[in-house]
Length: 498
Image 1 (cartoon, helix red, strand yellow):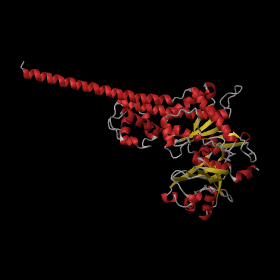
Image 2 (cartoon, helix red, strand yellow):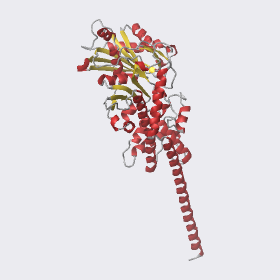
Image 3 (spheres, helix red, strand yellow):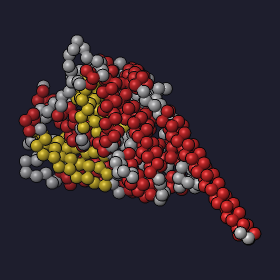
Image 4 (cartoon, rainbow, N blue to C red):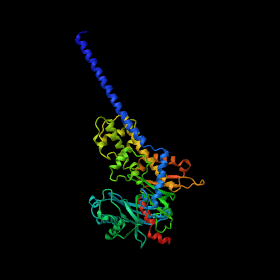
């Protein structure tokens, strides 16, 4: 072999060695990055831990806060608001009732014909109306006039057999899903607008009074019989069909719970005790907080950067508004500190709330062998075109950690309510059935969340007690529930009972 050939062979061998070294270095670097990404995931998983002992501590803390909130105004982070709902539907209600459900940029008007125990809901009709943006920041009169006009038009479409009894005024249940200081079953002053509304002259006003004046201005003779929020509507809707319903929980974009309390167990209640001896309490449980909650650096950062820092801590770790955002924040750290998506951090990943809980749910429920749903979500939402199966599996695992923590804490919250009511144990072998009415998109559509919550509650209660506790889906509480509460607080019901 000549010198040139030998030289070429040496150069070639050196090139191969260099290339091999490069591949090895790249593999080492990439396995180092993967190890770092997994370390971030494992640390997060550890901090999110919800062993049964911790969940019992959370439930006990919930019960303690419930007692404190019932004892005095401001006595607890749980507001434990007196709803003035002291009569829940029995199924005996008869007649025509209306509901108005105002909770965002749309409102719904409903008409419900009730036929008593035998026929229940004979007929229901509804219409959805969107609110023009200019009315969301205009005047109180303009907004309520618009609503009253839509209601009057809807009333004008009453068909055959859908009229109130002769000489009786139409009655309405009003679901108003904004913060209100309730002063009676049919009055409450607005504390603040949320969800894009900002109408200054409504602050401190009785929202039922505002609606009533607007109905008078458009010539509609209708009485607001009950002012409620969606959680109490869910409780009413559940109780109408099952008299064993003792509480309602909303697990949706936000979260809340309401339950039936003995009137005598409310020290801050100074009025006459209701004849029923009961009072529905709106817990506002999203505001619950406890040192036992498994909070991570991501939850703390989310809270600090939110519109209401220090508030709604429980809601921020269990509700649909926030679960996808927690996943995004963990992924962002994995991208920044472990180059999880390659050298560059995907710009879209830096946008808060870009990854919504429905996206997370779709990835979590992906059963395809190559996790193609995960791949397509990452491509469509975060503009990350190429992901390995290993990466996709890690993302599914992350979704599972976040959803499982939220679901198990929801179960602990429910146990807290059962403890307060003494329904977490069996007394002398008696089998009293306790039904919890549940509603909200997270509960309804996020299957893994729901099954984890239900199995955790069974685990917490034990086999024997859990047989007497039933979770029941109560759909559309904020609509039909309000009409049912108008019926159970009807001026004509009182005449009939007297």
